[in-house]
Length: 346
Image (cartoon, rainbow, N blue to C red; front, side, top):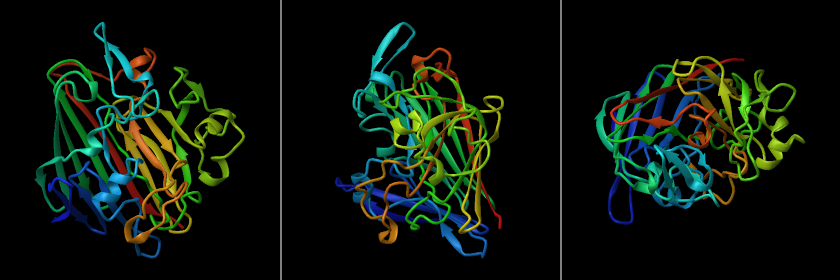
């Protein structure tokens, strides 16, 4: 494990960078936002390839609004109209996405300094305390996220407890490009999602409450499809979102670690398989990557330079009784895991 000072916030607070290594894999994680800054894996020829988008300074991270690489909370994804009811009381959240609440609000977990509880050569444990009322959420929430780098996988374990009933939905917002973060586009990556159903959205990207079958639509990703061949299909859901930006209902039992999705680049041969205990996964094809500062090493990030696999509870779950519950009861434990496993194929 290598620890350095990555940069400083305007108030002088140091942002630390931790480098984890295990076998051929390595990654860099920042205490600011718990950001996964880099993830290097070998390609088909053994060349190390950094497959996540990122930046070289805190200033550039703060300029972009894509949540690149960050830990997201208290509630990943959107909550319609920025409000929900819990135990008979209406809670009003900060609306930072038009009329809606997105990824925890104006100062979500992505914009906070996480504390380091433990650091080893291949593990980093980060903690964060979110006080009652932060961004409108009820209860004091204690969060712990563990990054563990195996010889062929990166595992992210999420843990949280609260002193009163609240809602909780944590994820990581890494943008992947298995052809390399500086390749220019991820449209040549092939995507597969283990889901028979997805949750359609309205024009503001808020789930309608419907759980729709993927059959005979471009939302059927049960077999690998190239992102660039399908993201702009003449299909209302894709038109509304400018491409893929939807939640899929992962097949299998919620709470069990199971295969959720995979991606592959034919350029590098890198394959990433995603497993999770969460009920859903948001596949975002990077439709609105625009006007971003230059990335690591001067890389240009443009539309669809990267895609996201955000494992999660369904978006706007607190407002849809037919969705899996995101309620965390006082004293109960929120515990979920996501594994990104890597190999190469010709």
